[in-house]
Amino acid sequence: MSESGKVEHPLANLYPTAFQSFDEWLARWNSTTVLWEKLGLLHCLQTMEYWLKGREQTVFFLLNVADGHRTTNPFYRHSDYISESGIEGCKAISRKAFDVLCAKLFNPGKENYPPLWWWMLEEQETFDKLLWFCNSDNYSPPYDEKKVSHQTEIFGGFLREFSRLGWTYNPTQRSFDRAVDVENIRVRMIAARPRFIEILHWIRQLRWLNKPNSAFSSDFPELDQACLAKLREIAFREDLPLPARDINASSMVCSRPKTLREAICGGSIAAEIIVLHSIRRREQKRLAGLFEASRRRWQEAQRRDELRQVAQQQETLAKRAAELEH
Image 1: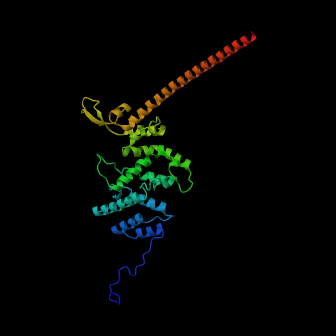
Image 2: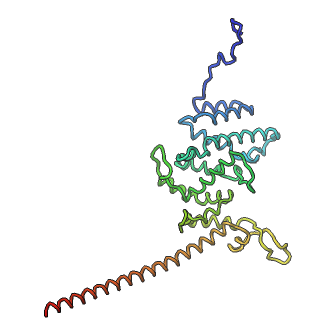
């Protein structure tokens, strides 16, 4: 209480300071095992602007902590015992790190601006780290339109856009604050297509590869040999509900398909894509042949018409010459 008798405000002598670097923040993080302090420090990262020289460090740290937030698998240590409450505490910390990532990285950001994660495409190391985090321990697509958290919706939207970059990457649609090696990024996206196909598979978006690139277009996402090999691997590695092959088996059993047609019978979207891709290429070749034959016929008709016109002109000139002679 002050001399005037008024109760002194609890913040009267407080001079708040801010973390000046990620290393300073990390030192505080490492100095405590208290759950609520850990959660508070993560919330600090959600509400502040990242340090200019510490953005990559901060994001890598958050990705490592958030990995496995949906399951408890990463928090079991086989060498020693962790209580159930300890596991739940680790899970709460991991979920909070995921919440921070959804707010500061996976969020699509402002309209007509690049997504907040776009900078991670620029270097192989940051791209690989982002790709590493995209696994089924961190996302499960909702079934039957089940309601999910806002953070899960954000991450699901990120996965859909990110996994299509192997085919849709177009730097002219996204602005950068500085010059980057666009061609290197394009090569990186194409090389990652098999991994993108894996992501499309487990988020149940694989059918996108069977859709035209745009309305009224006959162009589809390109499937090179690496893509087709990955699709074939997916089609044949899973047990599918297939009619029984043996009299002693039940009427419907789950088994590995032996052919692409069997895989399609069992509902494999990967097999559908392979077969439709093959049909599409064959039909495109056939139609291209028909077009080329039509073009040649048109050119021949044009040439005959031109020769006919020349002959008519020559005949007219000959008549006029004869008239002049008389």
